[in-house]
Image (cartoon, rainbow, N blue to C red):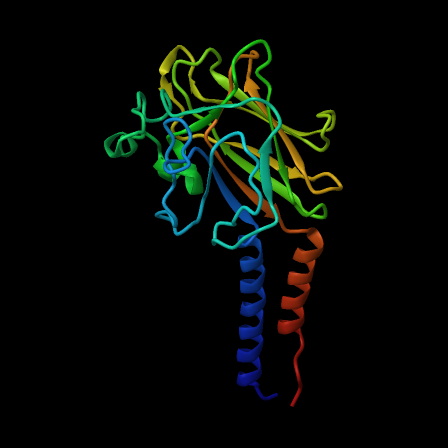
Amino acid sequence: MKVNVFGRVARCLAATAIVAGMAMSAQAQTLLVDFGRGAPDSSFRGVTVPNPDANGHTWNSLVPGPFYGGLVDWSGAPTTIGLGYTTGVGTDSYNGPAGPTSIPPTAAEIAATDIDAAALGSLGVKEAAIDFAASPGGLNNNTRFEISGLNPANKYTLTIYGAHEFSDDDSTVYSAYGDAGYTTLLGSASLLIQTPGSPWLHNRDKVAKLSNLMPSATGSLYMNFVGANGNQGYLNSFQLSAVPEPSSLLLLVSSVGLVFGVRRRS
């Protein structure tokens, strides 16, 4: 039996192209959102993430409150995804990962933002970590926003970073719902934003993750965050990633199998 070297090379190249195409498709469905923005349209003591960041990713730096449509993915490409709050929300960077900050934060304060960038992965960017969205304070601190324009056929993963010092609650609880009435809970996670017993030590290396979130039929996820005991909660940034459908993964495996499995006798 003769070995068809050129056929094997062609099959290898085809399989590589399939895998690369699937990887690029997944990458195009990842967004990074920073709750804070600098001048000219700045949030209070906010900072804009430079695009691209040190990892080569593009961010959406938002002023918490207004609705934003057409967010970009982390490659800089526009998407159909939008975000807007449906409750009151605060914004600041004071007593976040940089400690006391000025109006606006100085370059030295941004540089002093204390995070473990490696542990936080894509969220480990000082300009994104320094500022935050916060519950408005008062009797009801449930802080809600809608992520719209998602693909209802996809599932999504949210990776969340929250950090604050001298908070009334050590932890913030992040929850995702599948309806505007906030009755269908899809997932919830609690994150220590500061060290219990040492409130001057903020979270510098941990994230909360909500996985396999199925949007509503209209393509929305309804988010809520609040302190674990009902006090103010804090949200600094998040990463939203589409989860490949099982059918897509099966297609990938089947395609690779076909490429390598078909042989021609000579």
